[in-house]
Length: 313
Image 1 (cartoon, rainbow, N blue to C red):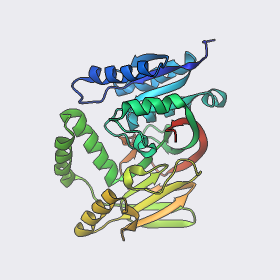
Image 2: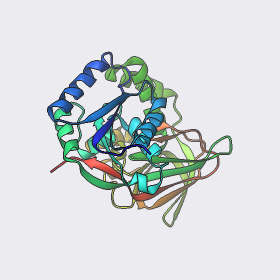
Image 3: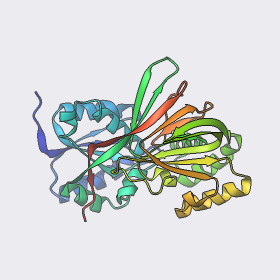
Image 4: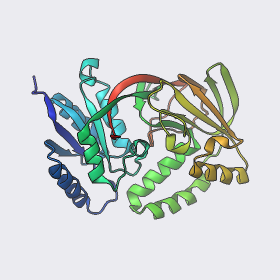
């Protein structure tokens, strides 16, 4: 049996895609760790596929404070790996984050900022733990395999899943945030804008054209601004297909945090959602596409299943 490391951190560093000097970033983090007298062991992931294997290694080697230096996708991989362990093991692990990804929405939700490494390390050292909820997407893939994917932030179905996929791919290739944003805008011209969906939310069954749908355990990249990952509920925003002028209005409201005020948005709060027919819309989990679901699929909440290190007061 591996020695249990109750004080020593296991740190997984996931270099940001497109960053030309990732070593400099890590050196800055390492300096903050030393200044705060943190005992730790460090491993680096060479690519996104390596995160689950390395988190599994950290858990099996007895680390009970696991810090992900990465973004939403790396956190998502870590969470899904941890959820494969028995409940007794899961409850002994505290997960923390130092934001370092293309998307850092879940870290920003709590107040962690990418350019404030010293403050982040101090908060992590305080080890203020809160049990948080996870969302869970359950579906069948093209091979007939029953799949389950947990998420911290949100599931996107439809247009926004396409947008986030384009943005992430462009950023990983081009590096520049502004350039990737411009390229993504051009590519949006070729994206499908509406899907005839059938949904069951609470006691409502919806059959209508939908542009995009967000099921949020947290802020959902601005689409579920009132969602919190500790109330045992999911927030849902269903966006019916708006006209061109309404589309621009929706983006403005998204930026200002008033997205739910738009006339085309149907907001819900629920414990689970059944997607009876998505009309082959793309599905993204925490900013990354999953394999295309076949037939109906569902999203539900798992209450208070992860120990997450949140900022101090």
